[in-house]
Length: 92
Image 1 (cartoon, one colour):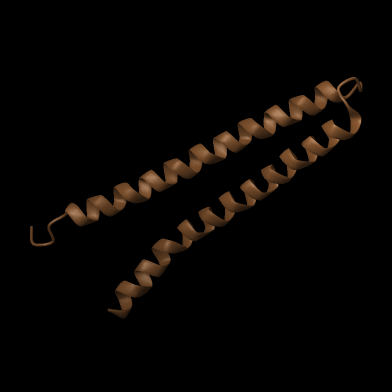
Image 2 (cartoon, one colour; image 1 turned 90 degrees about the horizontal axis):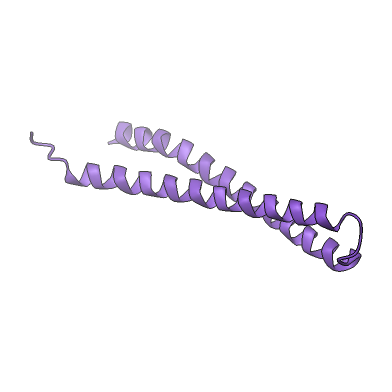
């Protein structure tokens, strides 16, 4: 029983690290998106760097979408792993 618990804990450690990384990415991207909004409002549309701020905003949006896709992929993988374990017959 203890050995199974240790194995389960070892298996979950990388998952926990992935969750932490994804949360950090979400936090950083949210900050970038928020700051670009502030800068856009502050400088206005006629400022020479406005187009560069829009590019930063687009890049942050694409990165956020990629992060969501990674999170979805991980979640689907986890669900697939669980369903395979639940569907397996230990007596065979």
